[in-house]
Length: 445
Image 1 (cartoon, rainbow, N blue to C red):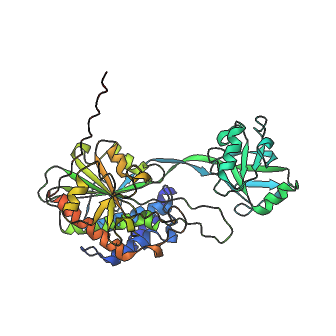
Image 2 (image 1 turned 90 degrees about the vertical axis):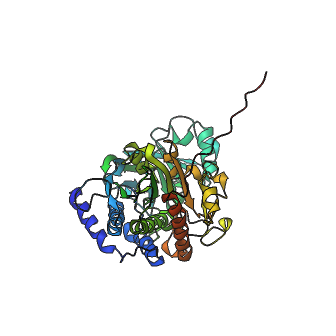
Image 3 (image 1 turned 45 degrees about the vertical axis):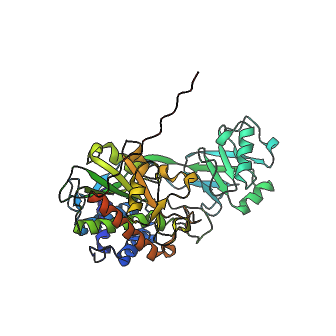
């Protein structure tokens, strides 16, 4: 049944393709972002049918652009590399009752994605630290009556229940459900008021999850060099985003569209692939890696690196594209990018010397160099750096990362800047290298 569903979802993706031009155009960039970040694809969370559909769309664009597949496969599937994913999946409807009355999930209560054994859980109301006993709570539901996450964690830690250990179910007033490592639920304000008034003294709960193999793909393609020197450059972006949430009032936006993170990066990579498929690299092969599973731990990129279609010793560098949809004043504004790992390789200074509009990552304290797919390459001994213009906007990882907040002129300029730098890299005008680390002086006697 899953196979039939997949084929039907994949088949629909090809119908979305725009008329593609070899040039990098603002209209195509916008089309890609709007398609990937549409409500219909519900955030493209790894392992969902919507993520499969997004992967199929990316594959169809690469195929139509003239990029070559790297994997054998059935017609239309040869650009897709299966990535093994196992995740807990909800089995049956979550159930909660108070005083024999069923509670409405999503309105009266929410749950963390952890199983809760079927049972009646006596409610322990905690309004101050001394209300929380150190023992005897294994079969109880403990309501931490504070909206301050730090305070709640301190109560738990001081009573010996760090992260909820030793408690049957942790009940919070925060729909983000801390601590996530334990069975946890959150209650609505109305229901919490009834607990405080001792109208509700116990909850009957049942939430069941089971581990399942899910369908997920990387999207991979190749554009061979005209006069190959045996080296390849990997252009990457991740196309997954966050799982749709079930918190908040009825009618609230629940979809993490991920327009900037990272539909913007995928759109730029697609346009660069189309350009270089028409204007072939001279010296170095171009490998396109549009990865799944970045948001759950660089899963897709690490799978690629575990069995690379191009040996890692022949992979010169990975250039990763992450969040280019909004301009950053610290980088110089519209059309200007920043590069992570500037001090790690010679690439940044080499590109800057050519007049490419980019600067060193202006926020080293955020450690962006180690926070995206590029760093999976670094950990395998391959240079990897990320181009971005993320300006610390507050929509990051929220439902407000919407398409209409993308700055289209900036995105277009950014893609063109990437094109110029990559042309020099692919044609051999620029050859980056690791920057040697200074030797540590040995302490004298």
